[in-house]
Amino acid sequence: MADRDDVCVLLPAYNEAETIESVVRGFRDQGFDNVLVIDGGSTDGTRDLAAEAGARIAKQRGSGKGQAVREAVSRHVDAEFVLMADADETYRPDEADRMLEPLFEGRAEHVIGNRFADMQPGAMTRLNQVGNKIINWSFSVIHGHYLTDILSGYRAFTRESFERLALSSEGFGIETEMAVECVKHGVRTEVVPITYEPRPDESETNLRPFRDGGTIIVTLYRMAKTNNPLFYFGSVGFGTIGVGVALGAFVVYDWVVNSISHEVIAMVGGVAIILGIQLLMFGVLSDMIVTVNREQTRRLEDIAHRLGGQQPPSAGVETDDSVENASAEDDAETAVSARDRQG
Image (tube, rainbow, N blue to C red; front, side, top):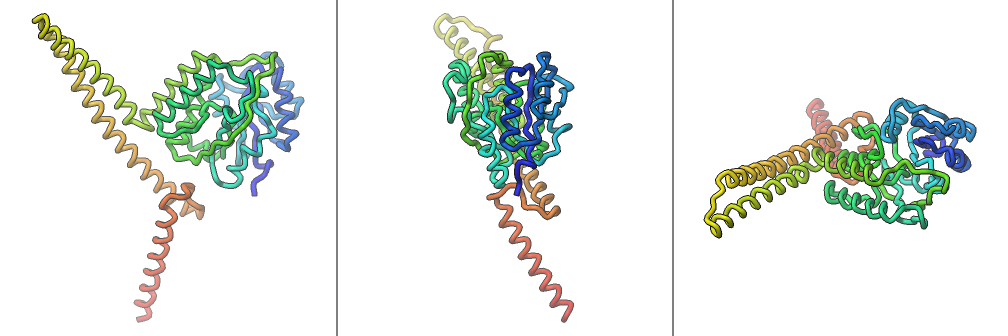
């Protein structure tokens, strides 16, 4: 049975001198000896304070939270499980067991802490709350899953599942990218309620709502190209068709009412409609290819797990029945072969 010794607490930090010491001590008081602070070049003594509190320190080679998380897991984490939190005292170390329970029990490979379950007064501005709801709604529409709070920085995941994700985000888009990749690769994900605390008055946030929010929306839409191509190309196709129809309606109206013809505009409108239809067709074909590729990938992963003597990760799918049927067929073939040899 897994326990705290199998967990690395990962704390990305940048100029968090006001809070880093109490956060590190909080997790150590909960029994986590392996606390890693990946520092993005702080100039306020964050690294020294974290080390004094008992954390391992790794100095980030690049910049941005996304790059910090990817670098930390790939270069500095050897534990089977990773518990990731922000270093600003907004997440409670005493809720770590709640985050890790689905991993320890094998129910999930990735856990997201839902901040909206118990958000304390002043923890998030009204603007940020609205922005979060828009982003979560957009995620559910674009990627077909509602994970309640995809921007939450309180995460727990297995290192193996993290290595399956193709992550490239440099900044705050890392949480969004992780959520999309979990859906894309079928990583079992669970959402658990957590408490979200306000930042201390002396601590300044590194988040820029409009800039980072825009980046997250663009990331959601960009990643739909490989995760939900029907939405990606379909939205562009419908938009293009809409432009063509609008131009065509203007040409017809001006010709009927004013007897004025617009041959060039009519041609542009017709081309736009044809292009939009082609994009829709391309989206349908791409979606079929993605579906087939996912099925083939799942089958290959099942085969790899069987050869390794492990249980396939996609519990509840038809793989269990197929394994039993395959075993029964193999036993039957073995019995027939034995009778033939005896005969």
